[in-house]
Image 1: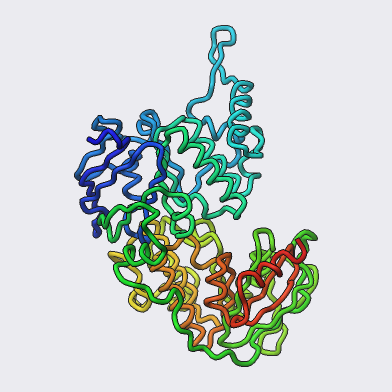
Image 2: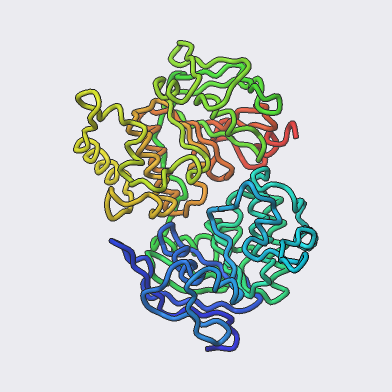
Length: 503
């Protein structure tokens, strides 16, 4: 082993039923560097890191840490050897405090009358010192359930740092962070790098990778493609190596022609005084209406209210010139509205069920015969058609959805709602956490739906996505609709000016 490398993974292979997830992968990490690991969803990045972290046992290959061959049989062993991992899917203990989450499984103890008890004072002080070191404004005794997703992410980062690890794996650490929070995370990463810690950084965000990483390793279809110095790469080069082909356009050519108004939302105001208020807009048939704004703009709250998930104190929805009374999602569905939620892992997929079950769950009434028997044959046939139509990569329709990549999970949710045959499709961050190749496929689905006359409302925090995919862009700030722009005239500066108009 080279003395320069703190970690080496050689010829790692791992198979699951019906798929070879890793095929002879090699990875070499130097201390005091940020090493980006990139690839499309399903390329094997997270699987490789789970092999390192003791969650999976590799079928073949070896792991060398600080010159010694290791094989971790559990995450506890990996942590004890100085390897931490911040997972993409946060799994805090919600009704315990921040400090209990940070020191879970290793609480400081003290003797009271010869009995060991948890030293809550030391745990509080140690957590407070850790948060101050990382410049995080998080109180140690706050319940995790009361934190925002971004602050939960901060606690996970603090927990990893508390182990004083030599290698920290960060799997999509910025997926739920604002720009300011990302800047703060990068400040922490640079500080750790100066201390000699090696960071393995997994992300689909090209600009982040080129800003923060020293080296980039790219994987494709479970295979090692190569490693490059970040300074020698461009966004186009990374995309080409990730997908194995040149993507000359990030967005498909759209052929939709917006027609008559299909829905009007008038004076929509939330029952929550801190949420959206007096929002009025129109949606045309065959139109893609983008919704922009910063975190806290109340975009998600607005579309959830349209779908009947949130209460309003005034306002109305008019669909095809008739007022629609929508008090719950069933009402919304009956009026031809579908909603893909922002957090697919929390409110989208049913992880313990198959692709088939996840696809059919919103349309079961279509497959009932004899009043109570489900026509499984017809359902299975429609699911197979969906899998083929939007190219879901899976061994079979019976595969558990949790075993799919993020992009393929998102496609399943698209299939679920398309089976309901909606006229209006609301998409809340439809490409969050999805690689560039899968994004293009999702964009193609959206463009095709609009061409077929479906009306799309698409919330996105990615400016290029908003501009590249929208016929018009509705911008919100602090619950107010601050402007509606023609997609052809929109640019990032103009959108930001409206997004901060009432800030």
